[in-house]
Image 1 (cartoon, rainbow, N blue to C red):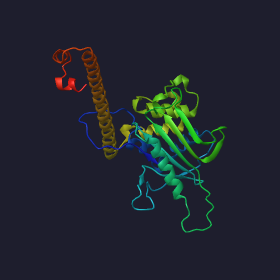
Image 2 (spheres, one colour):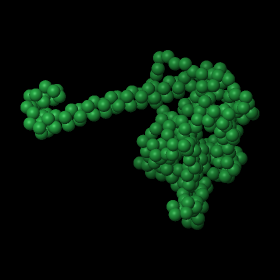
Image 3 (cartoon, helix red, strand yellow):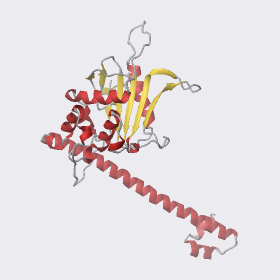
Image 4 (cartoon, rainbow, N blue to C red):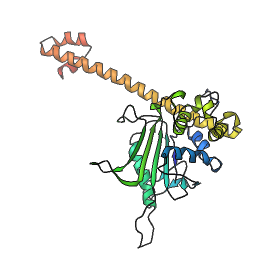
Length: 301
C-alpha cells in the first residue's frame, strides 16, 4: 500500500505568480503527478529507481486513503494516497514541505498501523507472516541530527553489534531534498534525474535535453500549468496559496522568536552587569540609572 501526505493549511494570499510547471511539494501538485491510475507508471518508475533493484514494483492499485483504529478512541491516520503493490507489499510516502516535531514518531506510527492491519481477525491459525511495509519520506527540510553530506538515508532494523539486517520487511527511506545540490553535469543515474526533477520542476522554464525520455516527457505534460482545466488551476492555486501562507507564518514565528531571543539575551546581560556593580558596592540609584533597571529589580538580585 502506498500513502501520500503533505502539510495542509487554509489561508489566502492576494497576489502570487506560478511557473510553467506545478510545484510537486504542494498537496495538490504531488497528487496530480502520482496520485491517479492513468499516471501510476510515473510512480512505479520512481519507486523502482529508489529501491535500486532491492524490490521491483510491477503494478500498483489505488485504494482508500484513511486508516481507522480498531477502537473508536484510537487516533486515525489519514493519508492522501494509498496503493498496494502486486505482491501485497505496502508503501507509505510522505511528501513533507516543512519540519514537523515528532515527524519520526509519526512515521513509525503510520508503519505500525499498516502492520497491525495485516492481522487476520477471527483466525486461530494465523502464523504472523507479514507483507513488507516501507515508508518513504520525500522531505523539503533536513533533520537536525543527520550527516551534512548525506541526503539519502536507508534505514532497516539491524543488529547493533554487527550491522547485519535483522528484519528486512520494514524499511524507511528519507530523502533530504535541500541537500541534493547536484548540477546537470553531475547527474549519474536515473534516480539522480528524478531527484533533480522533483527539486527543480517548479523553477524550470523549459525541458532539459537529458530529461526528454518517455517517462519524464509524460510527467512534464501532466505538470504543465497551461494544460490544467479551469477547475484544476483553481485547485492548484488554492493549494499553492495555502502552502505559501503557511511558510510565511512560519517565517514570521521564527523571526519573532529570534528577536525575542536577542531581547532576552540583552536583558540577561544587563542583569549580570547590575549584579556585578551591586557586588562591588555601587549605589542602587546609580546602577538603576546606568542599566535602566528599577530599584525593585536590583534589590531582587
